[in-house]
Amino acid sequence: CVTSNTSTFYVGDNEGSCQIYKLDAHNKSHMTKFLGRFKLHDNNWIKQLVYVPFLNGIVSGGLDGKLLLSKWLFNDAKNSVLLKEVVTIYQYKNGIKSFDYSSASHTIIVCCYDNTINIIDPLVCARIGQLGTSGFHGHRSEIISVHCNDMYHQYITCSSDKNIRLWDIRNFNLIQQYYDTNQKTLLNCVKCN
Image 1 (cartoon, helix red, strand yellow):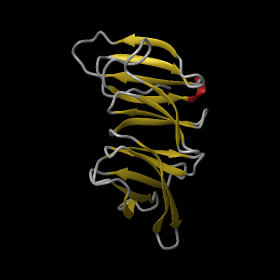
Image 2 (cartoon, one colour; image 1 turned 120 degrees about the vertical axis):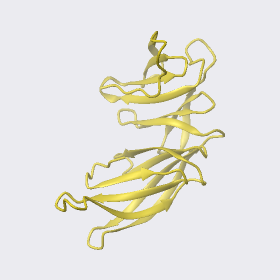
Image 3 (tube, rainbow, N blue to C red; image 1 turned 180 degrees about the vertical axis):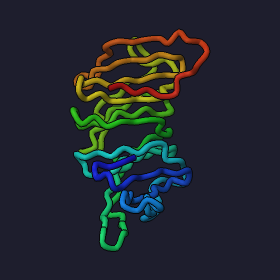
Image 4 (tube, rainbow, N blue to C red; image 1 turned 135 degrees about the vertical axis):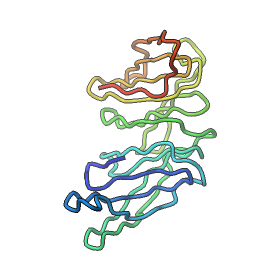
């Protein structure tokens, strides 16, 4: 996860920690400097990190089911960083598989291991909507990935049964669905421009 401050990047690990590095384009032999490692999730994989400029922080999702917002204090003179605050945005019974932030709606779209799509308002730390696997419009198998396309107010999801669905961020309605008929491959992630 690279922040808008392109001199810093974050890496989640399998023990629930976030590692922070500073890029140094002027030093070709050591282009990165390790700034620190901070425990965020309960001894479990961090599945994804997303920088959210609106919140000026990093959102992390893990197998422990927590969606966390972390804020940091950087001291460039000392090349150090301190963890300022960690806020639990939402807690799930099952782990988090994938999520993305929509700057258009200021929401976080979360795919969980219970095959639900949850729409989270990070300002009030609450779920404001949910799409399940049952019913006419929901996915009927494991949801693997989600990606927001703010330019068109849409997000796209894919599931293990090769279903790709396009949703409207404003009202969470299904716009279109596509079934991948290529039987030789499995879907693993989805991204749109």
